[in-house]
Length: 255
Image 1 (cartoon, rainbow, N blue to C red):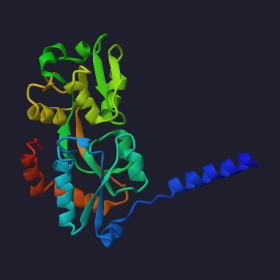
Image 2 (image 1 turned 90 degrees about the vertical axis):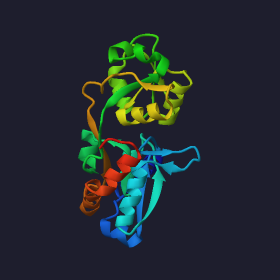
Image 3 (image 1 turned 135 degrees about the horizontal axis):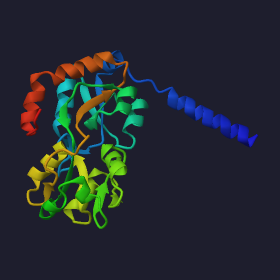
Image 4 (image 1 turned 90 degrees about the horizontal axis):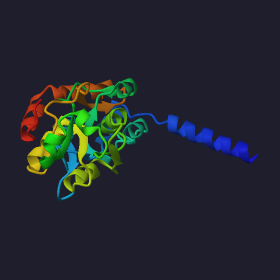
């Protein structure tokens, strides 16, 4: 009886999980609120400033989208390991904040037009730049590579690092702190983030690879339910308009 009871609970739990249905565009409009999920640790797209406030290019883009659609915006904090599951569970309507287009995400969700082109680079302390100009120079014994869980940074490290020590950090902020404090030597991240921290903390963070790493060219996108075509259209209209160009200049991003 106990096994049967536990089995029923498991089936019930699965049914509840599978029953989560994303809000339609009509539902969003009726609620007068757009829920935006962000991990909140990816500068300059979506991150917490020194005051603890959520800021960034994607944060401003979300506000522009909501304003154009006469909606309020509510930001919902997520994480890279749980972002897709949170969106599938209808915890928010759209995911933003540094999302790389991948085949898995494209098969499960609706993805916007490209937000910005990107690719992986290596970042290190500026005094060590010449030591780590290639993957081959990084992947050797004695080198400490820090990585945050759940995103394409982890995918890259798990696929390519065989000899170097992998230091698994709690999140992207902890990885950055590892470089800043010299408790790690290298982190792989996206060019857009590398450029941002290199400009914000000159002499501390430096991009060490002269070009994006081979095979890593990618696009940043926004992610939502496949069936919400009206939301997708509104997002793509925003991405093709003046707001994107103006905010890209404000955040010193190349389009």
